Amino acid sequence: MSIISRILKIKSRSHILVARQRIGIDDKIPGTRKKRSGQTRQRLGVLIGAFVCGFLLIGGRLIQYGLAEEPTTASLGNPNVVASRPDIIDRNGQLLATDLNMVSLYADPRRIVDADEVVEKLAAVIPNLDWRETHKKLRMDSGFQWLRRQLTPRQQADILALGLPGIGFRPEKRRFYPGGRSAAHIVGHVNVDNLGLAGMERYLDQQGLADLRAIGMTSGVLLEPVRLSIDIRVQNIAREVAAKAMSAYEAEAAGAVVLDVETGEVLAMASVPDYDPNEPSRTLPDGSVDKEYEKGWFNRISNATFEMGSTFKSFTLAMGLDAEKITLNSVVDASRPIRMGGFTIKDFKGKHRTLSIPEVFQYSSNIATAAVADMVGIEGHQQFLTKLGLLSKVETEMPGVATPTQPRTWKKINSVTISFGHGVATTPLQTASAAASLINGGNLIPPTFLPRSPEQAATLAKTVVKQSTSADMRYLFSWNGLKGSGRAAQVEGFNVGGKTGTADKVVNGRYANDLNFNAFVAAFPMDKPKYMVLAIIDAPKTGEHGGRTAASTAAPMVKEIIGRAAPLLGVQPRFGSNDAPYSLISY
Image 1: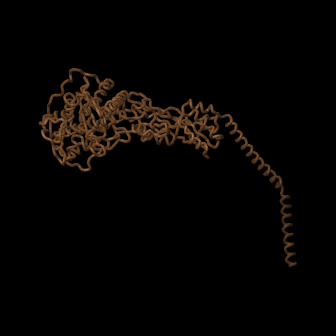
Image 2: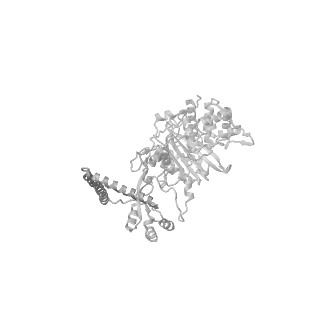
Image 3: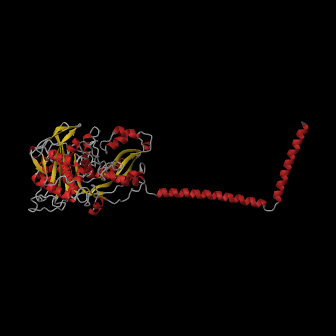
């Protein structure tokens, strides 16, 4: 062991000697020590410079923040809430919907000192504040809680005066509808976040506004107004007449639509009961939602289907004329009821004799109309109604349009009952559109809620009946307006023609004997039709002179609408030249 220890000791000494020799050699090399000292100073300079730059940068930012103006609102929450929507205007530029700048109240619960004090003070400014819910939010372990959306500037000022820590405001947009209920079902409404829920408001979101909003391209941007086809003056008249009729005739509902037969533009569409889009959901004193009020959301003109009764006789006779199975000079036997499949089809006020085609229309004969449908045949009948767009969903901008219903399999009994308006349910909007095609020269033009020129309409029009058939139908409409059930809608000087429809209302899948769904479809002026008006009234208990058929309820509605709206639409009354219908000729 001593030998090994001596060897290790000698080896250790040799390493120390070699290290000392190397150090000595390095020191003897010229400039080595000077070079090493320069590198050290250079490194220290870089380090000091980095620290100085860092401190200067931090100091500059602190000065910038100190000089910046303190924001008056918070930037928390959903950044899309402040997104704008375009104004909506009528065809004449009248404002229908616009955005108002509002603020909403929020809280940072982590900064709330005394939740009870905050709730008590806010309740003095905000009506109907839910104390329990607000207190719960203020006690949450979060950095943001909405307390109340869309406050008035006065409420904001009062809350700011309270000096509550942890309380802030965020700018928002609130949709305002100057017309209130008048055009509610057309314009629609939005939710609290300014997203379209119904009507043309929803249509705008479906056309890309919602996508632009999602990426922040509508925030603070002035958007071009959206012009609709409706005339708010005519809309006000239609809505007022429908509301008055529903009340006077003790009905469940009523409505009306006015179309331009040359372009398909909807000038007015009213359905009552309705609602105020400024307050789409009404809250009762106990905090629950008023369900009866929400029933007004239902638009019976485009979102509901009904059996339209004898208005369908217009389509049946047009079908027979177009198929050349009948002419205006034809006569049809209506002397006896028709018995088929366990049913007896008879006339409401039968003449019990043969009738000419104008008389079939005038007296609204179920027997004669069924005979005309039988001449065409089941397949031809179904094809004709399909061509008129009465068996498929109408193509228009309005969301939520209802789809018509029809028998799964058409049998002879179906064709017979459908000929006079029972067995097929359509929307009043598409019924008016199909009727317009019968008197405008034979062109079916999709209804629209946006402006459309005659040239644009021509590119969309589809010929559904011959021009000669259309001329015959203008004659029948005019004849009935002067001699038949349309007399109740006649407005002196405006040459109104039309057809009534009184249908037994379907209740729980069965026809009710004591309830009617009434409609009247009319056009004016009949020498050169420009506008189509259709009025409906659901389950009236009474009517003019105590009657409750369409002639006593829906026809007077059309009369008032035309009498008040025609001058506004530029239709000049003419007296003495149109007192007699067209000459009775066959084409």
